[in-house]
Amino acid sequence: MAVKEVNAEGKPVVNGNGVPLFKNKMTKLDEKLDNEVVYEFGGPIGVFCMMLGFPSLMYYMWVCLEYHQGKIITPSSFTKEGITQFVLEEIIAKVKLGAMPTVAAAKIYLGFVAYSAVMAYIMPGPVINGLPLPSLNGGKLKYLCNGLSSWYATLVLSAVLHVTGIFRLTSIIENFGGIMSVAIIWGFTLTALVNGISVLMGKQHRMSGNVIYDFFMGVCLNPRIGKLDLKMWAETRVPWPVLFFTSVSCALKQYELRGYISGPVAFMVLAHFLYCNACQKGEECIPTSWDIFYEKDGFMLIFWNMAGVPFTYCYSSIYLMKYELTTGVTIQHSWAYTVGLFITLLFAYYIFDTGNSQKNRFRMEQNGSFVTRAAFPQLPYGHIKNPTYIKTEHGNLLLTSGWWGVVRKPHYTADLIQSLSWGLITGAGSFLPYFYFCFFVCVLTHRVSRDMERCAKKYGKDWDKYCEKVPYIFVPYVF
Ligand code: NDP
Figure 1 (cartoon, rainbow, N blue to C red):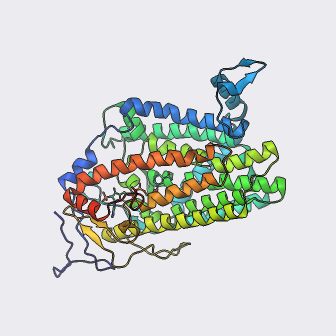
Figure 2: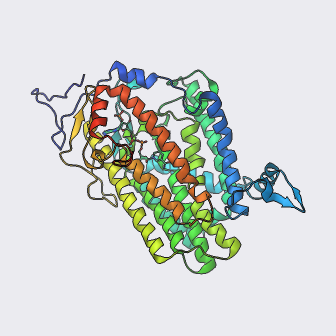
Figure 3: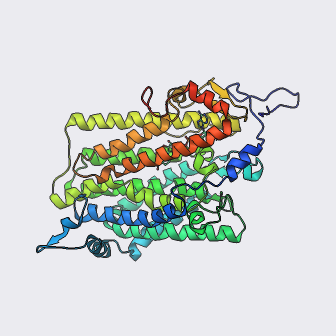
């Protein structure tokens, strides 16, 4: 049952919008759901295949982009003097040729990883309470949200390093294959370290008992080094800046070679800037997100953040650049098409940004962790005054105002549109710039089904009431 928080005079405590706050009392159901082991992703065999499959797929797609103008290669693509060679042999040969982990690549990637960890430790920012955790009997962890100050400092520092020639940002794309390999190795290494140390420290949480499955899903819920929360750092500080700087690197390379930056290349820099900036400026909303309060810090999150996100979400930028380098032709579209996509991106970004803000700020108000920040851009409609909601027996409130009154996952729909626009800006010459969109559809639909199942168990008939009030998940009147 929900227990309202009361002040010394016995009156209910309300937040700035007059919504009552509830005590963070953990129910038995919270604990049960938090400890329940459900084999996801096909269980141990499925996750084992994914751990082998992710890096292999990354290398395969890299070879397609680097040596074949983004064309999907098959054995028949490798016909040499009438003899069809085995595709795997070719891929290995090309990886050896262009994606060996070099010292220069290690310096760039691991240098940035170390730098970002130091910045996460030392830069100023507000301290935000996470959600009450069943494993801490309702206790909350504190998160130093200094992503914004670190991000602004990184933008200035990178410009200075590039202009002075101390570190030319074009080196990122020149060493791309090697950097990707270092990131892949680092993804496995960090997972092993975090899992191993967590076991030694007795920090096991929601363990399945299967070594492979637990390596993939993780051991510890919230691994920390002092005040540095490793999961939060890995979620925001490495993948998105690396992705952004990869696109900047492609744009600078184009400028060096051509003396201009084309519309599609500028589009990708803007798209990656918006996404990265959103993660930093809204960092204080992240402690209340699913990854932070529920997912453990295993291979899935670590590898994907350290290697998967930056080195697969960047295919549009890489494709545009490689196509130009190998054919001498800059990919351009009609003004109407390009401008249309810019408008689509900005519109989708607006819904994505305000959708996340609306729910997270609403939740932060319940949690007593709401803060206003001077971060750019603060978009109108990102914070709903006097929202409507469904009060659950559990105690949590389910928002039914703003975009959350239209569909149950407005931020997912907007995010998917953004990812589709990243592909569309490259035209129809290659599937690879659409890989992120296709992959993301699978990720988000799987995530939705996991989340809905969990919420249905957690909120029971209140969840049914909520689904009745907001019947569509992604698109009103369609799905
Ligand atoms: P959500 O922000 O959807 O969080 C889900 C949780 O929110 C639920 O478990 C529930 O938690 C709570 N909730 C659900 N409905 C409501 C409601 N109406 N009112 C209040 N609380 C509600 O999920 P994510 O963390 O998955 O996504 C956050 C963002 O990150 C999205 O924009 C997504 O697109 C993006 N993302 C991007 C990825 C990428 O690779 N680019 C990968 C994954 C996500 P509770 O149990 O507390 O009620």
